[in-house]
Amino acid sequence: MAHWLMKSEPESYGWADLVRDGGTEWDGVRNNAARLHLKAMKPGDEAFLYHSMSDKAVVGIMRVTRGAEPDPKAPDWVRVRVEPVEPLPRPVTLAEIKAEPKLGQMELIRQSRLSVAPVRDEEWALIVEMAGR
DNA sequence: GCCAACGTTGGC
DNA sequence: GCCAACGTTGGC
Image 1 (cartoon, rainbow, N blue to C red):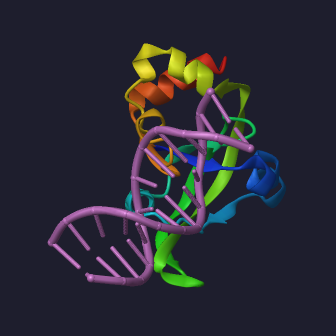
Image 2 (cartoon, chains in turn yellow, red, green):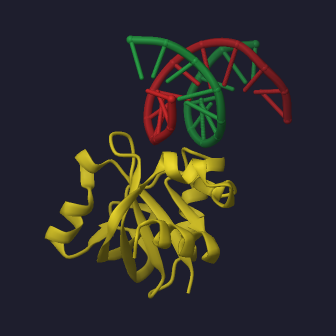
C-alpha cells in the first residue's frame, strides 16, 4: 500500500468539508507531475491531507477508495475518490517537518508547489508519530 | 526549438 | 505584500 500527500487550501476545501461530505472526488489537478501521482494511486492507499497557505500543516489521514478515472469535466485530466479515515490527534506543521532532518527528502519540501506527492513509508510513520498517535 | 514574458502556487 | 519556483504561452 502506497502513501501520499494531497494539498488543499482549508478555505477552499479542508478536512471539515471532507468529513461533512464523507469523501470527495479529488479533481481539479492541472499539473502533469501531480497527474502521474494520481494515476498511480490504488484503492486502499492512504494519503495525508495537507492544509496549505493559512495552515501549512498535515491535518488528517484519508483513504483512496477509487483509483484514477478521467475527470468528466476535463477528460484529459483524472480524479480519484478519497474518504476521511481520521484526523491527526495534533496537526504536524510544515515548520516541524522542515525542522526534522529525516523528512528533508520529502517531495513536500523538495518541490513545494506539487499538490499531489508520494510519501515514503518511513516518512509516513514518523509524521504519524509526531502527530502523537 | 529557444527563450522572454506572464500566470499560478505557496512559503515567508 | 513580496518573491521564488515552476509551468505555459507565444514571438521569433
